[in-house]
Image (cartoon, rainbow, N blue to C red; front, side, top):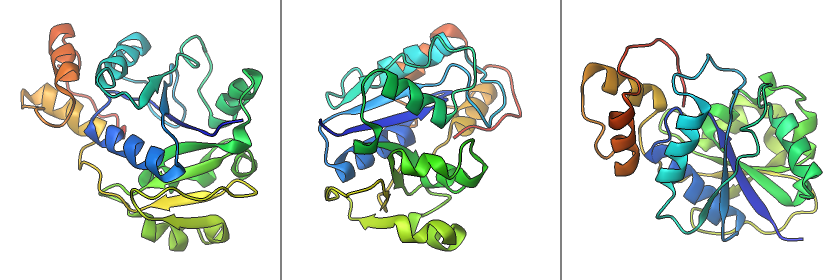
Length: 221
């Protein structure tokens, strides 16, 4: 059975940093395609500013010209928080061998993994491909998460990790755009340009639908 990489998130909105993480994780795990899974009800975060439908549409626009990316509606019909363990349950129900798969994630989000539901059991269900973000480099994770250090494997950017006999935590120190969803929402609310921070089609969608025009205090990567 082939290997897959999945990238779940709130994507409120999707931005160039997300796409950089997706590219680095796909290349590191040695697969041709990456599947993005927007969460209808994200855990660990405040209520998204944009609806699930808007966020799904923006991801679709962001990857339209990216042949290596796919979009999944796996979480769109769920009324429960999209905990990683529940997402893995759904993938397995659909016939996916999750032990041969990986979840892509930024280093800033992975640093908080000890707070996730079903931790540490989820680490035995699939691999993680963790990519540096401007605020947190993967090099800092061994010190931040010493109990997980034996599971961590360094992967050079653009090089595929070899197959492992059990799920691993692959660390990829690749450059990713210094932008967050919080930044985007703030800039839109202030009337500032978001050119170059999100794909052009996403920027147009945000403007057309009047998203994020009011200031908020929520935070999202």
